[in-house]
Image 1 (cartoon, helix red, strand yellow):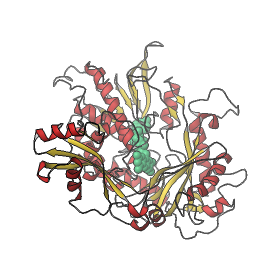
Image 2 (tube, helix red, strand yellow; image 1 turned 60 degrees about the vertical axis):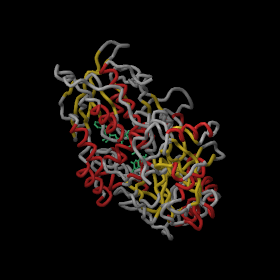
Image 3 (tube, helix red, strand yellow; image 1 turned 90 degrees about the vertical axis):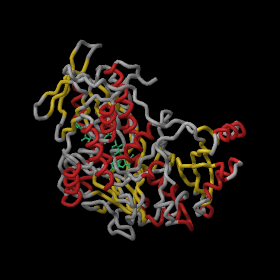
Image 4 (spheres, helix red, strand yellow; image 1 turned 30 degrees about the horizontal axis):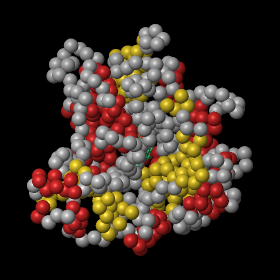
Amino acid sequence: LVASQNHSVDMLRITELRLPLDHAEGAVRAAIVSRLGLQDTDLHAFTVFKRSHDARKKTAIVLIYTVDCELAAEALQVDVLQRFAADPHVRPTPDTGYHFVGHAPVDFHAEGRLRPLVVGFGPCGIFAALILAQMGLRPIVLERGKEVRQRTKDTWGLWRQGVLNPESNVQFGEGGAGTFSDGKLWSQISDPRHLTRKVLTEFVKAGAPEEILYVAKPHIGTFRLVGMVEKMRADIEALGGEIRFEQHVSDVRIEGPEGARHIRGVTLASGEQIRADHVVLALGHSARDTFTMLHERGVFMEAKPFSIGYRIEHPQGVIDRARFGPHAGNPILGAADYKLVHHASNGRAVYSFCMCPGGTVVAATSEPNRVVTNGMSQYSRNERNANAGIVVGITPQDYRQDGKADGPVSPLDGMAFQRLWESRAYELGEGGYMAPGALVGDFIKRQRSSALGSVEPSYKPGVHLTDLAQKGRGSLPDYCLDAIREALPAFERQIKGFSMPDAVLTGVETRTSSPLRITRGRDFQSLNVQGLYPAGEGAGYAGGIMSAGVDGIEVAEALGAAVLGVPPVD
Ligand code: FAD
């Protein structure tokens, strides 16, 4: 059952085709024929476009298919569409192919035209550069970190030896923040132009498993991502793009009077200057020095809300049994995930974030003497523990540094707030990038943890057990501690075992999204600097690999349309 990448518009799409989890191989075909009231010979072929499951009834888990069908004759198709005219689940298959806004003529660069720059080679920068390259615009990518194999060694250097390279780590380097991750690829963005399909299709071309095209919650895992990133780099280069590593953009050249300011190029940390009239800023949420520089240069930005909290680890079996009951371990279902929200009595929302089934908690700092947690997994998701962020929503008013109760907040205050808790976590972990941790049972009872129970935490270089809520030196603000303490037993009502006393909390999770937004207009350009295209997670326009990739595509389209003088996407 392989999903087709280029559906013919002459196909029919059936949604909500429900079959039992353990259905026989031919059952999908039989269900289609029966649903459409046809003979078996009327169905020429079909492909599965999406497959999800409904596990609300654990003893009767159901698979839900979206299928595209090719009927044996056009007349049959017309007949079916007439008969099902009032049924929203039987429709012509939409065109999900990708359409470029334009292409550069072959001699476009012959007159010494300046090439577009893309700063950052995470998912957003990769897709921005790929689309620009596919349009014939030969982008130059500037990435502060190293190429992915070298970067992998540096990242493991922190995890294994406690040695951080501030320019080459989980956040910085080829592939961006998503490279050492669970590689979850779903997103809740509205996608009328099927751009998520373009992202998935390019990932498959680069070596991702084909199933990501049709499973409802696709994921790739770390090892595969590494190879895919290299392949996408090669594709961009083959199209005339250029990708330069260890090129830290440390300044921007902006010219023109107030109200008509325009980007004219960038300066690298080496002192080299590169001229450009179009620059995509795909920086990610951890480029704190670059945010500061842009703020000093007067690029418009504003504070935005984000979330902070801990990682929680349970045995994966506990989650599988709670979610799938007797079907726990079924290979079609895979390792179970969860999504939880609790509205605490102090007004705070507590929710699970970036859940990684069968994965590990990782050290994700990019700054010396600070501790940040996140999660990753391999494609197999077969590590012992499930982990997820348990985070509390905060607003700019929470992290203002001037002690006043209201009034404007500096766009950079959120970064200072993150740094405060990341430094505190380093201290509570007692150095060496050990993370402070506590057992859930102790945390709820407000006591120090001194010995692990049945859950072995996976964070490396290691977890230092402590009291995460000690007076005057708590690992998070009191309102977060209170909200999480209240949420854990509430989550137990949805997932049996969630507040098991031996589950482990590890802190702190501070980089859930960007603390600021580099605001742009409808033309995708900075509000006050023409030619500058803030993009992806760092600019506050994405939260995850998929949405960052889609944003990269949209920004590249806007830039491409401006350069080529063609109408932008409506
Ligand atoms: P980034 O990926 O952060 O890329 C930004 C790039 O810009 C970096 O490579 C950086 O080095 C570079 N850069 C920054 N400043 C400069 C400069 N001045 N000069 C040159 N280059 C610069 N999301 C999911 O959807 N699914 C997951 O499973 C998932 N798991 C994750 C696990 C971990 C451990 C982490 C850290 C993140 C995870 N995420 C996951 C989040 C996801 O990685 C990000 O949302 C995504 O990478 C954002 O893409 P981006 O391109 O906007 O930014």
